[in-house]
Image (cartoon, rainbow, N blue to C red):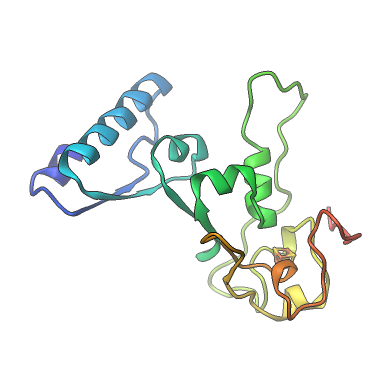
Length: 175
Ligand code: SF4
């Protein structure tokens, strides 16, 4: 499938979960191959995955999506050093790390909202540990720049909403 996608030498390759269901060794080989091909063909690649570890092998910029909306967009380094959106922080916390001892990996309580009748406010509101009240349920957060090309869609970072960043504020967690 990858060869078929490349046969016309495209300027852009869209790879949607190309390593799903592969064992880790084969996955590593495919990622290495895709990195080499990208450099050789000098093409752009849009890599879609739920696997942050795989994404971190290839991406320069990352867009984190939740329930069909963009939650956060930034460089690879920023995503792991300064994740801003509560969903992104939960995702990065759930990555197993060598040397870190814990009985259970953190998970995100609840489930993704129905897209047939999407919530009227923030799509992550029903699961967000930093939920700050009616503003989260009542208004869809805009994607706002936070410097250095880092953008986030969360009322915690909107100057128009009276809230402090989550690591400073006593926001009530739902879970
Ligand atoms: S807008 Fe509110 S509910 Fe949504 S991620 Fe930010 S704090 Fe959480």
